[in-house]
Length: 323
Image 1: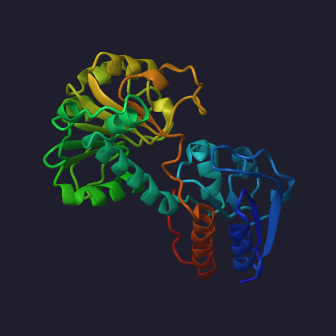
Image 2: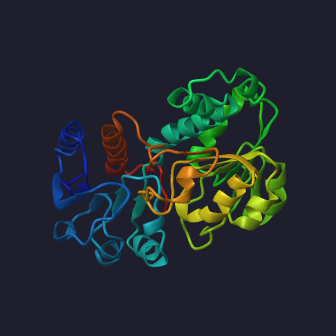
């Protein structure tokens, strides 16, 4: 294959940048004048003009205009800003491809959810609060409040890579697991229902896991009405997007004890203001969008891209292809 121009605006750790340079040595690597992380797209980049491959978080509108870009690989699992008809059509018209980094982030996000679930079942947050506060010995209160996950029901909204890995991690606990996604295809390995059936499924769930992406159809999907359908004491988890939740309704459900707890890794906005009611809501645990994080994250993102680059060079199907 003739050398290609590979553009990147990925904000990489030094070891990851060196790995990227080494892995693209047979091509021409062009770094954008401005690097960006996964949570925001860079603006139009003059360096992208003429490139065949874009790696990072390129400007979606610019991608539509540049026919030279045949393959886009983003450094995140989420691709909401790129999920637009003009970009999909542009990529299809040039017989190109768009891939993401789901294979990098499915494992840490699934482990984060498992940690949330076990923490709640074993009442770890209450023990931490006690240790940092009164330092009492709440044996009589906490011991009977702990739970076993066995035989409980988990309802997962957004059945993609993270959900599939979570199902595998939960297998030893013998839970009933049900998925909900926009278009079930029958190959998920667990019962999966359409979004239209959500309201009849929510009342049976002990654990409601939200991995929904941001989109007009999911904005405020979890509202007061849906929280009202929840089983008394059900636990809500969100590693999807903050925009999918009516946070005032969530606070109200926690204040009234309708929900037993909430574990949130994403909020709206981010960072969450220090005076936001969620910080003080009862049994609400918040992590600052760290579910996908892990040591060596930047290097793993690059290694995933380079593995796909080898496939691209060989004319093989690309991993984590979105469209």
